[in-house]
Image 1: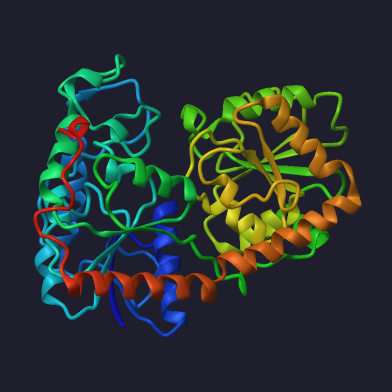
Image 2: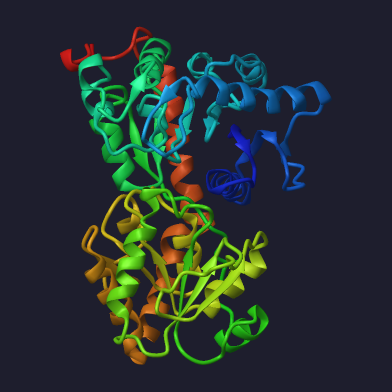
Length: 429
């Protein structure tokens, strides 16, 4: 089977890294996969970026112009918006190449327009890394227009000016006449797809993002702490704060509240902050803080996960964060809220702790429960590693994608109606 995958980048960002790992898992299982990108940084011959200088310039220009169009919308929603207006040569290039399946990943704005997505003559599998595909221009939203259908009368009060989300959603509805096979890494995102006005009748399969568990594995904790420059004594709680302190979706305010609840109850606890250098005036969390900055290579990240005793993911809304899967593979339990795709990573009281959404007191209890008992913690670490291998390893995920490709090619052969599927509900009109 020959697969042409398309992603904006191969390793720049969480969605790009997930796409690249899927590509590597497929190749390791014998699938002839080629990853096409606008921005190639991995140095991998199986990843093809733009060759001509003009193509590289155009790729950068598309991002700039896309941002200019996005600025037409005034909204209190802090997440990224992508109207994906600018046409590209990707449909022609993909249709001209030999392949059994076109596999799309994160392709908004800088890669393809909305209309481009619907122009494939080949079977299409689309792995969603956020909510954008069935929303308007939003990548994540707590509103429910995606479920009701975007209309003028259900626009949230926090938005004003030109309704970019309504306009983008209507363009998707016009352009995507043939259902594509959707893959979501989490059950939560699959449920959203099935409930959406745009894709509710499309085929959806849950396949987790893979990780090479032969590479991502535990390192001796004492050695990991020494090499990471972290204290050798006391429990370490790791969390990521990569420029997201002002994004309510990431829930750092909930983590701060949870830490306040832990004061006087978690003696010896130290916090390790990934993704930020120490600020001029570090906040008073009540616990010693160790900032490790940005880590880009797998070895450094493996050392950090192995050095930590638990990873905190306080997100209000997340798909299947790579950090959670990487932590499990390194034998480090995860504390998270029971929300979004995090239950697909954390088995409550087996590989970590799922706190009630979005209760900081229960999150604090989860941190305490994971760390307070040494024998329990050892069992959690073993279970975390075991689950990572059983659920996220390359062979397991590649086999699931093979099944998806077979189903997508079969559906394409029998020819679903080209005018779209069933009549849309009145609320989507």
